[in-house]
Structure formats: structure tokens, C-alpha cells
Length: 267
Image (tube, rainbow, N blue to C red; front, side, top):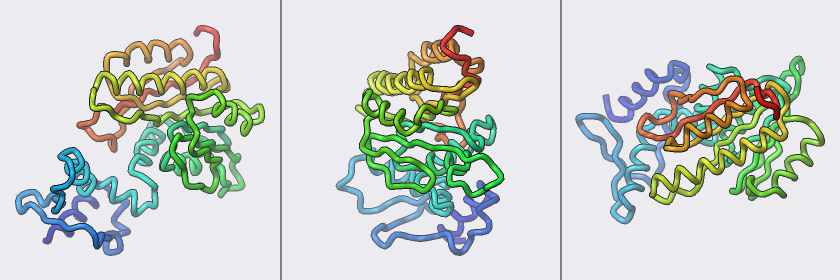
């Protein structure tokens, strides 16, 4: 068994549903050069002397990540799609007819999952049609079934007003935040910055969500986790810390899930 066959075998074991792709799956870039370890069959990129160690580590991880490969096959824009899929499979947060506001949407992988989950195209005329509004400070390539607001800073009041203009008075059923700051390399500062983004999304959710709605945000775990959870518990009857299988185990990334929004009054 050569290295590619071994990698494919491992992928199929990770994802039984991927068996249908087999021979058509592997697309090797003409611009990349690989070597493999005879011990682990791990793909290791060559000719990266000009790159930093962190860049080399990132590329090596990407080349060996089965979720990255499967995302390409499933035509998701990023592997992060599986995180939302897995959270939804367990916690049932996406339903036909929902109004969803997604913060930090680029490149649009979560948006793809949300569009399918709330039937915003709609592909199934027997189910209610939902609405998905995807916002990011980066550009977002248009996606059928979603209103994309690329190049917009969600934390600014004018961006949030633009979202409200699209909603036309409708309340939100689900606020998703996959926002993350540019990493500084200082763990404590990065944690503070992502918590600030989470609070921005939470404030919007509290102000514009319908009763019984849901809030999901990504954070990098740190000393302010507990305070954010406590604040969420003031408005949501259920608050959980979740880490889906596709979230890398060596990452500090976790997701906070608030369900059953009870309004601006205390519970």
C-alpha cells in the first residue's frame, strides 16, 4: 500500500460515508511536492525553507487532515462546515423556516450548512423557507440561499443596522458567531479579543432574537470563559460548552451553546 492509498484507507475509516468517492477523490496539486514517513505514512511538505515553522506546521497539518480532504469532496468551502454539522446533529439547532444571522461567515462553510438546514433556497417546497444572513469583515463569495454582507465589520452599529434592514422586522431564531480576531501570538490577548467578539454577537442576539431562540459562539478557552457563560445563563435556559469531533483536540477552540432564549427579563 503506497502513501496515498494508506491515507485514503484512513479517511474511509474515519468517514464511512466517504467510501462512495474512492478513486475520484484524490487530487494532487502540481505545485506541491511531498515525501512521506515510512513509519507513519504522514505527508510532509518539502521545499518550505522560506516559510516560518508555524507555516510549515500548518501546511503539514492541513495535508494530513481527513476533514480537509472530505470538505473538498463535499464541496464545502472549509473544514469548519463539519463543526456546525456535528453540533447540529447532536443539538438540533437548525430547522426549516428559521431566520439565521451568522457573524464571521467567510469563507462561507457554515453558511452552506445553514442554508441547507433552514431550507432557504428552498429545495423542499413542503418545508418552511428560512433566511440566512452571513456577515464578515472579509469578502464572501455569493452563495445561493444566503444574503452575504462581505467587507462589513459586525461590531459596528451601521453593519448591524444593515442586517436589521434585511430582516424587515423579523426576529432572529439563531445567531451563529464564528468570529475570531487576528492572532497576536499572545494567548491572553487573543482570548480577550475573541471574548469581545463573542459579547458583540451575544448583545445582538439578546436585542433581536425571538423567544426560544438559540445562540452559538466560538471562543478560545481562557480565564474569561466562566463570566461569559454566567452572562449567557441570564438569558438562555440552557447553556453548554461543546467541542465537536472535527474541532482539533490540540486547539483551545470551544463553542458555547445557549438554547431557549427567555427574553430580556431574568429567568
